[in-house]
Image (tube, rainbow, N blue to C red):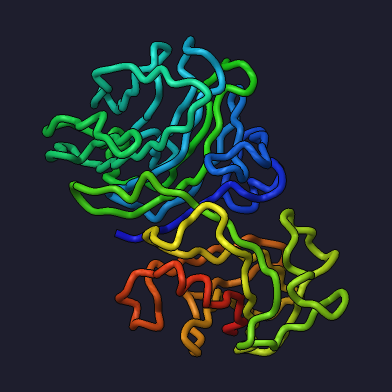
Length: 343
């Protein structure tokens, strides 16, 4: 299993959503303080949705916080698992609060309604694509409790491709405004049946507060403080930023304190999000970097096109422990995080 994407939904506006997601229909609204733990959340209205491309996965696990904003009445949430531009699996909540998973036919539904309104719930789904599913290939968890366990022997391969290459979160059609909020989203690769999920989880978004002690190769574009040039909660493109031009140049930052995570919580991964632009026609690559226990560790890097792009890299374990130990909260707080030019 491997985390491939997380979104704490804690940026500054609905317009920032397209920085993290690959596809967006309409523009989901954004609530700066309406999230699960007092930070931000997406607010989906009418037919708003966001989507993420995946790498032809045979099975996938997702989790997200969900809060109904309207009374029970219509299907008001929809998650689709797609391949080759067609739907493999659709997950939704019916008008009477019944959660349902469907493919070529119904694959499973909750035996009792979920009528919660104005209450945050945490939903997790495990979906495997197969012509003949096995036990636990189709599952839904609600607040850590199993609500749907699809029967074996079902066909989930509606597109006859055997994989999922896109997942979309959002609203069903013709729903009144402010119908639902989503927060703290994760996407996890998985193979075959899954007996455990990550959640319910919380995602805490931290912001640069000062320069780290390791890596000072980037130069502030405005003023003398690099941290002040990269701490915007809505990226302002070329207004202020840090810049460098030499391979292996890197810079790290100390981050703000946790607001939603306690010292005893388990850390499933730490994601570095950075918004970067290449100037000129030569090939360039950029990656994330973490300085932990006095050593710098570089992530996989990304080829850079011309133009501002959001990149995300995830450290699921502490690299200073040979990448085998899960993060302790104290280790995350002690580390500094940043970017590196790798080409």
